[in-house]
Length: 263
Image (cartoon, rainbow, N blue to C red; front, side):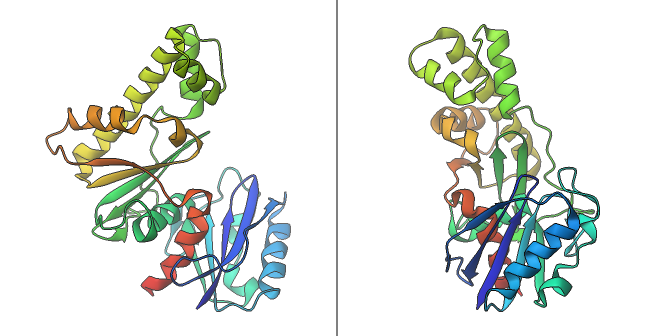
């Protein structure tokens, strides 16, 4: 089975053909997200017409319930929520929230394989979260589960750096300074990782998960042993694992395509 998978966000749209095992069959092509819903629909229709595939899979920003968006994502144009991807492509279509799709990719072919109860947090400009409960994507009553508001995004680290006397807003430069021994940078990074550990403890106390995978640009600056030890010291279930995600920037495409294996 060949699946044309899209990852649609406010800044860019990426697409590729993926097989039923989550293996990319073509290179990933990335284009800027058009400024109108009509142009997004035209782009998807044009791409779908250019490939010989069996199915369509769309990972998208926004809340998805029962294979449709329940409202307009804040970072996409008016009318986007009304696009009928099945109709414009002529293909059977699965739609999923991008964080959920990425978590599914990690569960099926990445760091969370073998864990039936797990979560993936994406750490970047914002914070995304996808949940796998009893081997299924958990969406909640309205599809909005995992819409966490933890203060562990890039701006939060930059704010901590300012308060600690490290006058640097670039997260990777903060990490570099910390590695060089800069006291204020080390303190800000530690405070940020403390916040991350608190966030994971809060989720763990409610959900009792086997593992968390961390993705996104800021996942690269996490000291996993430090965060994992901090989490384990504060919970009754000491075996939970904190892992770097493995599917990288391909996660949304792969995860959306792999959802077809459940059908």
